[in-house]
Length: 244
Image (spheres, rainbow, N blue to C red):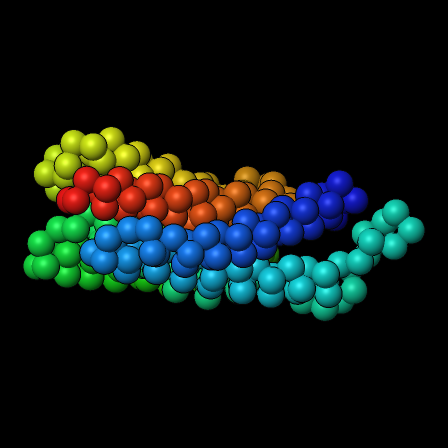
């Protein structure tokens, strides 16, 4: 790893820790500003960022244990950089992110349970299928890595399809004051999530696994969790103000 790459990863992880820490405080503090029906959605936003904050601290510590900057050069210490923290994080936070969107829409009890369960299960399966491929770093075994990528894309595409087609009718039933925001939140989810399968294939394309993957996943996480949470808060507040 070059010095520039080391600094880029170091600073991006530090930025993510600060972002998730601040977002956690913000979302929990703003629960009092929304109607009771939307407090759970904001609680989930806070929990998602709290979980991400914890795991990014662990990733940051692991990175510092694995690499040292000595006399202007990056030296590997021999300690393993534990990237599995990301998948533990995603296994917890990705289903919760989808539940945030479903809950803030305030659908019927039956529709909330049905959509929430299906999307959460699909999200968990997607993460579980992606992990075996992520840990493959040997170029000779990239065929297996592609296989796991394809398998993980099956639940991923189901989630995208359900967000586009399944929630389309539900969005049209939302108060007009928030229809645009809900639609943008759904679009942000889809767009930010598309970063993950793209970053996953970086090693197969010959890009640096030590820099491009870490920075790519970090950017995607900040957008998909913190920025998405802000949009959930805006929807909840606007619907609360309208008494919807």
